[in-house]
Image (tube, rainbow, N blue to C red; front, side, top):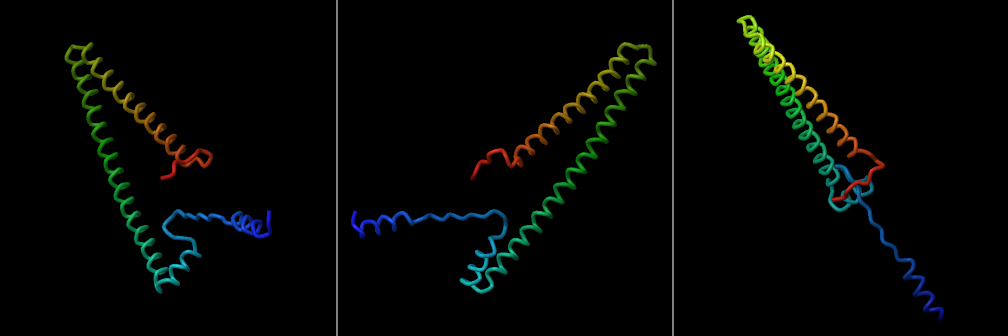
Length: 144
C-alpha cells in the first residue's frame, strides 16, 4: 500500500458521525448560544416561549384536577343518596311485612357498594402499575 493510499484510508477511518438530541422545552446552553449568534434575541424568545408553554400547561392541569375533584364529590354524594334510599327502602319494605324483599333490597344495595369500591380500587392499581411501567428507567422505551 502506497503512502498516499494509507493517508486516504486514514482519512476515511477518521470520518465520524455526530448525532445530538435533547428533550424538554429548552435546548442545551451551547445550542441556545448558537441561536443567539444567528439571531439576536432568539435565546430570550425561546426561553419566553418555554415559560408561556409551562404556564399554559399548569393552568390546564389545574382545570382538569379541579374538574376531577368536583366529579368525584358529586359521584360520592349521588352514590350515598342511592345507597341510603335502597337501604331505607329495604327497611321500610321489611316493616310493611315483606321481610324477604326488604332484606334482599338491603343486601343488593350493600353488595353493589362493595362491588363498585373493589372495582374502582382494582382499576386504580392497574393504572398505577401502568404509569410505574412508563417511568421505569430499566424498561425499554419506544422512540417516536
